[in-house]
Structures are given as C-alpha cells and as structure tokens.
Amino acid sequence: MSEVLCIGVSHKTAPIALRERLALGDTRARELLREAVAIPSVSEAAVVSTCNRTELYAVSPHPVAAEDALTSALAGRAGIDVAALAGVRYTPRNCDAARHLYRVAAGLDSMIVGEAEVQGQVRHAHELARETGTAGPMLHRMFQAALQTGKRVRAETALSEGRASVSSVAVRLAQDVLGDLRDRHVVIIGAGETSELTAQALAGEGVATVFLANRRADRARSIAARFGGHVVSLQELPEQFVAADIVVSSTASPHPLVHEEDLAHVMRERGGRPLLIIDLAVPRDVEPGCGDLDGVTLFDIDDLQSVVGHTLARREREAEVAEAIVEEEIRRFAEWMGQRDVRPSIAALREHGRAIVDQVLAENAGRWETASARDLARVDAIARAVMQRLLHEPTIRLRESGHGRLELVRELFGLDDPPAAAADAEEPPGAERDNVRQLRR
Image (cartoon, rainbow, N blue to C red; front, side, top):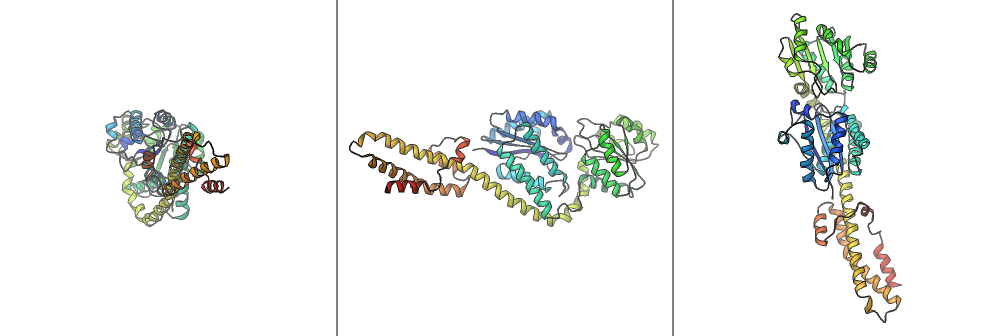
C-alpha cells in the first residue's frame, strides 16, 4: 500500500539563509520532480515553493526509503549537506501530510495568517506537477481537496478579512519606521503579484511617487498605470536609489540584484540621508551586508514577524473555525484514502477464497463418478457459499477499520500486493445470495 509523505521546511523551522538555498523556481522545480519520480520507491511527486516554504509531497509504497532519497535530492538541489536539514525539516505522512497541505492552502500556516496569495501558489504547484507528469491520482485528489478547503475557509470565515498579506505588512513596517508615507519617494523592484500588492498598499496610504523596475517592462507598465507610478529599467536603479526613501524588492531572481559595494557608492551620493530597504524575496534580492552600511535600514521577510502579532490576535477566533473546516475535510480524505487501500485488499482476499474453492474442487473432480451435472453444480454452489459466508464478517471489519488491520490480514492470508485494477474487482453485492439460489435450484 502506498503512503503520502511530505518533506519540508518553512519560516517556522528554518531561517531565510537556508530557505533561500532551498527555494525553487519553475525550472528547478520541474527538474526536482523528474528526479523524484525516477527514484524506484516514488510514484508521484509535487513541490510547493514560496518565499516562506519549500515542501516536497510524494507517494510511495516504501516511505522510509523514499523519505531518505527525497531528502537527499532536496539537499543536493540546494547544494547543502543532508545533515543541515536534520533539525529543520518536518516529515508528516498520510492524513498528517494532507492536513498540513490543507492548512497551507487555507492560509493557516502562513506568516500572515489568512493571506490569500498562498492558495494561488498551491494551485500553481498542482498545475506544475500535472504538466510535468508527476502528479497521479493520490496527489491529484489531495491537492484538489486542499484547494477546496482553502476556498471554504475564505467563504465561510472572516480569516482573510482585510486581505492582509506580506506586502501590506511591509507597508505597515515602513510606516512604523518613517511615519506618514505620503511624501516619500518609493522604488519597487519586481512586477510580480507581491510587487503589485505592495503598489496597491502604498497607493492606499496616499503614496504618489512610485517607480517600478523590472525586466518585463510591459508587466511593470500595467501595474504603474493602475496605481499612478512610473517605470524605469534595472539599469536606472542606482539613480533611483539616490532619490529614494523606501525600496521594496520582490523578484524571482536566483541571485542578489543589490550589492553592498554598489549601495555603498549610492549612500555616499545621498549625503547622509537614510534609506529603508524591505527585501521580500526568497532568495534575497539584497545582499545582507547592505544592512551594515551607515544610513541603511534593511529588513528581510523574516523581520516582518515583529509586525505579524497584531494580525494573529485579531484572527484567532476565525482561525478556530477554519481549523474545524480543515478537520472536516481531512475526515473525507481519510475515508477516501482508507477505502482506496481497503478495496484492493478485499478483492485480493475474495480472489484468494475463490482460488481455494477452485483448487479443492479440481483435486476432487475424479471422486464424483456417479454424480450428475446437477449434483456437481450443487457441490460447487455449496463450496462457494461457505467461502462467501466465511469472508463476509472479515470484509465488513476491514471496511470499518480502514488502514488498521490491512497489514495483519494480508500477512495472515499470504496476500500479495494486488494490481491497481483490483481496487474495483470486489465481489459484487449479493454474490452469496446468487450462490444460495443456485444451490436451491
């Protein structure tokens, strides 16, 4: 029987210095997915990679071996030793793995509880795995259910009220440091969803001077047009940094865009004016050493934790309701997963019984010289009715217990792992009654 497992790190377990090593863009994620399903003990795989987490979900009949191999694959992609993950990774399995994904999709495991962006990230992870051909029926069902759970939480609770996000918290942090932002000169690096939300939050605070720098000028122009900003090229950044009060950066670049040496030159030109930089990217866009320069105040995404407490207090009651929704959906998944494993075992058990009946009848075929065809049919029906009645109670108990007794039953009856098609090969309802009718005839 296959199990679902998850291997992950998040903002709750690992610092940004490690998370940025494990972060995966689409290209690297596809490479990891192909590497994962090439492992003999892994049949399905999907990756969720955001600024706050990198999680690898997989399906395997041998979860212990799969967990070791997948951890090595993750570490290898990050260029780190497996030992570096020992104290920071989490490895839930089966319903615990599904529960974790459901909570992620619902925004319950986010730095900003209730954030809506993560649901789109989970959907993207599912689509990426399907496009790569590594998501099979188990992960497909689990990710669909996780997205449905997130949708229910947002529809049935006020957890996402106010649309709090990393971007809105970053703007609140800027207000805590600088006060009124209306006359501030702001530069946003990047034109993704986080940058767009940042521009929206700044516009809501009355900021009029916003410059967006991005390699894709068309995307930057679209955001600028909505919020009254201006577009500049990445080559113009040094000039914009000289005039800026606030820089917010959030790109998908695998390497830093703002280097300590270059920023030191900019700070000399600023004549001592302070500069606030908020780096929301993972991997980081701004070299950590920039924060050591005179006049520079640098925050990365982990520093936003100090602002998050206010959000948690207001949403605690809604989170309790959301957790109840997660548990309700988990019970459905557990029932489906249990039946998915039980059906092949029941089919194998009944096939085992039929094989014994066939064998015993064949062994005694030469002992019925005087029996008529009708007598032989009666003997056949009696043997099969006994088999059906003998297996009736174990079948009911297996359906009720789910995973609990499967291994014991398979071991006691010497059942091999059934093929996938056996899941639908159960004895049809009323089979015993048909045998009894045949016996009476």
